[in-house]
Length: 191
Image (tube, rainbow, N blue to C red; front, top):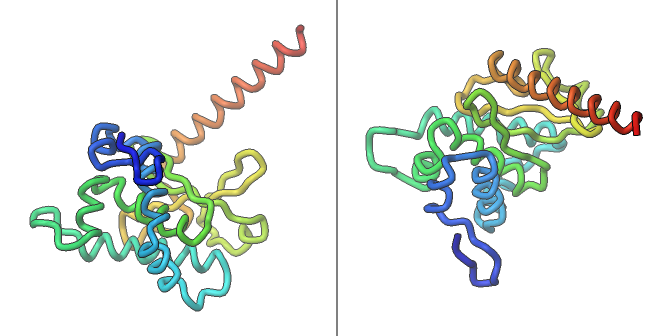
């Protein structure tokens, strides 16, 4: 870990590579990118004219999916910063880092999560946004907040939808948390 010029820990590429691309390291990389003035400016230009937050989320999601599918060549030297970032974060995790960074640069509450070996972005949406989601979208609820998952590894991935294996792993996590919570409540009642 290095220290930035303002005395805060700075996340270096070497730290990221050693971390094995875990969600925490991916989130750190995403936050660092989202704070960069060029990223903030680009994100604002990308969604310019989009009136509501769901359309801004969809624009960022679609842009990254198309970007990944059309520009990355894994067999040649990196052509630009996107290629370098995707190689650093990995083919599977890189799109999640870019989506998360752009959404965070726009002020959205986005977080990288992973399940079944796949990194994806969970972005918070409001209750009134849920009615405007496509019918196949699978929003989730945690601590009274609503989230939609974003998997931008391919251009034609539907908004708010994850593969079955990932959804099954996430469901197992939720069930395990509920079981632990119920068990803890039973112990408290006995005391």
